[in-house]
Length: 423
Ligand code: URA
Image (cartoon, rainbow, N blue to C red; front, side):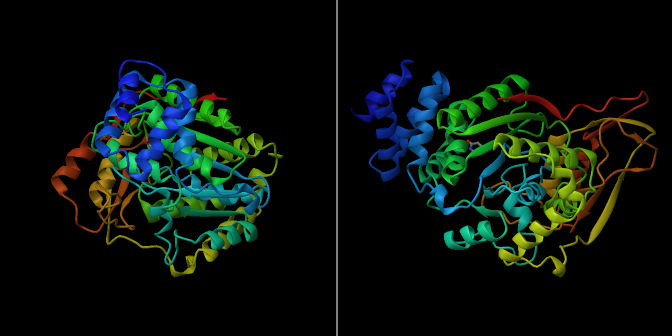
């Protein structure tokens, strides 16, 4: 079948069969189908959607465009977590060693940050020497010795997604649920895992701004994983305010270390434990030990071992910004808004993220001591502390931060972090 006939079929709202989807993706991966035909199909999918069966077929086709890790190469019960990304979301960093300390194996392939949401790899790279690019043998050895390893996506994993994601970025076809689902799941399912927990963020600082879209994405992710024979559960969690009290790479590593010491902010600590329990439960493993593993130091020990296997040196210290500037509350009251999107943009302006893939990151900068919605604040007390190396556009930063927080005279309830569970 010619590519234009497949495009025509989807354009007219018909369902593509497995062979058509596989043939199209194989042709796009090997270059026989050009970008302009792939863009046309992506736009037809954007407008007409895909059935659950088509989405699963697209996911398998993209996964099989590259290497799929043989589960027999990794010991134990293998479980992972994927977050759709949010401001201050550092949970993967304490979570992987915590779950490893409880007996599961976590082969985590993570991404870099782009736009206002930071990436796990950028955060890990603020640890001097940490290498995210382990070869396959070193990755397997780390998993065997430690039980967790956090690496970057290799060129061999889902190359069709790599090509298609770049194309979607410039053809206005990123916000399509079947395209997002197949993009995320083709990479995760290539990890050779038995079970997966998804954290679908919902709110101003997330990809999905409202609950209907977050629910549709969570449903699509879970159904696709289940269709591929895996155990999958999704949590929809709030991203209207940043997670935890820090935003920025080294600052988020410090908060992760606090969580691993059994301390840390209530929300990021609580979500780490909840996701760990869900990962172990989804993988049919006992969930009793998670809090104990934080308190007895065994999760921290796993983290230190993993960092050492990746060449990192925690005792060399984390980068620190030259200036710490408090943003003070103009009046006393209760925090009623701590807008994740505005605070994410402020952190980007300080240099903690990248607006385009070629930008470099300043690991030291960002925000700390963030006040949370519902907390009491006195006039002149910091709503957050800016960590700056003086390279930002001050006027723009002041404008952003001016609208990020609101303080109300009346008490404000703290919003629930976990909104829904989809399984
Ligand atoms: N993350 C991905 O990996 N793919 C998407 O399409 C969107 C978010």
